[in-house]
Structure formats: C-alpha cells, structure tokens
Amino acid sequence: MINSLIEMFSLSFMIRALIAGFLISLCASLVGVSLVLRKNSMIGDGLSHVGFGAFAIASVLHFAPLEFALPIVIIVSFFILKLNENSKINGDAAIALISSSSLAIGTFVVSLFGVNTDINNYLFGSILAISKSDVIISVILSIIVIALYIFSYNKIFALTFDEKFAKSIGIKTNLYNIIFASLCSVVVVLGMRLMGALLISSLIIFPTLSSMQIFKTFKSVVISSVIVSTIAFIIGLIISYLVATPTGATIVIVNLIIFIIFKIISFLKS
Image 1 (cartoon, rainbow, N blue to C red):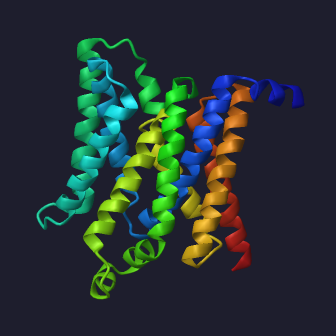
Image 2 (spheres, helix red, strand yellow):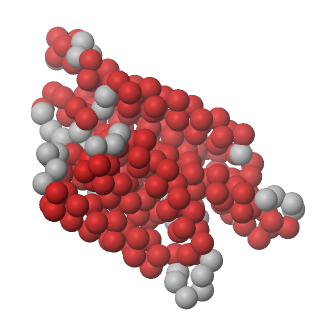
C-alpha cells in the first residue's frame, strides 16, 4: 500500500493531476454553495456541455482546448443570465436548451471530422489529458477565482439570499452576477479536463449538499464544502490509481459516500 502510494506520487502526470485537481476542487466548492442555495446548480451542468462543444471544435481547428473553450463558456454564461431575465424562457429551460445543443454540436463535430481524440476523455475526463500548461493555467486561474471570491464574499452572500435586497442597499447586482458567472465558467472549464462534461457538475453540487446536512450557516457550509471537496478529491484520486478505475467517476462515488455519511449523522442528531 505504502509502496504503491510512493510510486503513485513519483509519476509526473499524477503530480499534475493532484495540483490541478486540488485547486479545482477547492474553487468548485466555493461557487457550489451559492449555486445550490440559489437553486441554480444545473448551470454547472449546462456550462460543462458548452465546454464539451468548445473542446470538440478546438480539436478540429487544432487550437489549444483550454484557452479556446474558456472565453466561449464565459460568454455563454452571460447569455444564460440574459435568458433568465426573459420571462418567455425560464432558467431551467434556457440551461436545457443550451446544454443539449452544445452536447449535440460537440458530438456531431467529433463524428463528422473524425477527430483523433477519444470522446470519453471529454465526457468523463482523463488525468492523462492534463498537461504542464494546463496545470500552470489551472494554478493561475484558481488563484484568481479564490481571490475574487474572497474579495466579493459579502456581495455574493447578499446575492445568494436576496438579490432585490442587495440591489436596494447599493450593491451592483448585475456586475457581481457577471463576476460570479465568470467564476463558475472558469471552474467548469478547468474541471472538465479531470472530471469530464458529464461529471464536473457533481464536483460543484455534492460538497455543498453534504455540508448542508450538518451545518446551517453560510460561512460554516462554505468552509465544510471546501474541506469535503478537497478530501473527496484526494481519496478519489488515490483509489482510482490503486484499483485502476476512472478518476472522475471514483471522485463522484467518494462524494456520494460522504453525502450518505453526513445524511446519517444529520438523521442521528435530529
């Protein structure tokens, strides 16, 4: 066991996955609290499908997938905000519309042009797909996400619980909604390399749902989510290496087990 762990962390691609994944898990847990409490948790799923479509197009055009997908996903997140303001299209319908269309476009492009890329890497993620440049970009963007979240913490808190009240006390709600949408987009695009389009939303949702079973204040849920998310990632990464299972799926299963444990604790406390 110990020898296997030593061997694991002697591999360069595992070190890259550990660094990038740890930071992505941390960022995902931060934005996840507000998304879940605002009942917008499916935005992550929608944006991940947009990222899949962008990754597929980048492969066809021989562009760097991460750099190509990020601005596209950010722009689409702004578009979703505008659609949410349209009374004719509610939030869920807007996300479903964009999500299914993007997934279809990505699959169509990959099939039509016969891209020499395993589509499963895009859908379910792959630690082998994380390059040195991806790690550098992940570190830089993760630090920016964390810094912006800390700087905007009070504003995000107000927007999470009562956007109208936040606007009435002078908070520039449109600006901070755009900032928050950008943070979500960055987290989703970074996380797709590890988790894939179909699993990245779980990295955002599960830690918050688990934490909410026990903790009741916003701050305590945020702190707990960060701890749960990073621990679940590390355990999932180690298990996936030791038993040769898909990393993204293993991390999700670990998160599911933690959620069940927290649910049992909550039940016993009540």
